[in-house]
Amino acid sequence: MIDNNAVETDGPPKWVPYVGLTGLGIVPLLVGAGLLLGPVANATAGARAYDAATPCAQERARDCLSEASATVVRIPEEGSVRHADIEVKTADGAVRRIHLADGVYTAPVRAGAPVRLVSWRGGVRDVAYGGADTGRAANSVMTGANPHVAHQKPLGAALFLIPFGAGALSLAACWPGSPRAPGAPRPHG
Image (cartoon, rainbow, N blue to C red; front, side):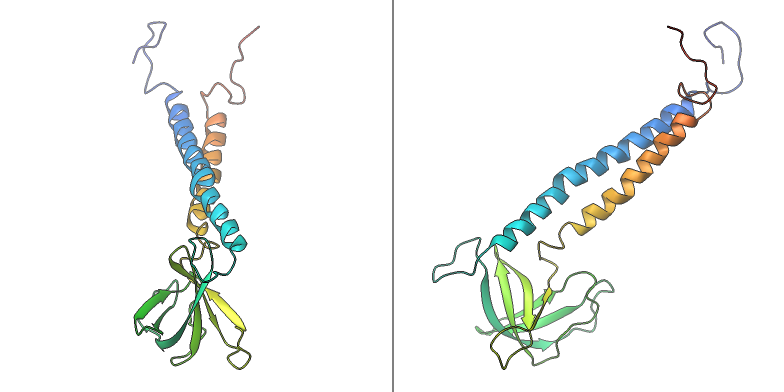
């Protein structure tokens, strides 16, 4: 290879790894920032709207909380390693499979137990159980559709990508041949 002074050199220029590492650092930083500003921000806004929702009156609005009584029919054994599932029978006789939130590895109820399904914006968001003698739910468990767990996957990806990108940029800044490397000639002026 011939450099700018028409002198033959061995191998690629020293700045090639610097440019590659810079690109390898900028892309994950931008994707991570996009995840934080897009899906994570939307999920947290949805969680705030869910918290502000009030129980439905006679007429059902889209942003109100509705409850429906159901009975646990069975707890499928072939559930995922990441979460448990339950099958419930609603008052109208329909059987539904409900995916509980990631991290709930065993169903907190047994087959035959009465539960209340809390719905919001067309999806079951919580399963309330226990306290049958008082008429109030003693406990509840979030489903996979609950807005409080919607941010977890994009946030996890962003928390991986941003430090990875920052590390690649730090490595690029110290790479021999980079304009910012220790000992690199500085422009006069």
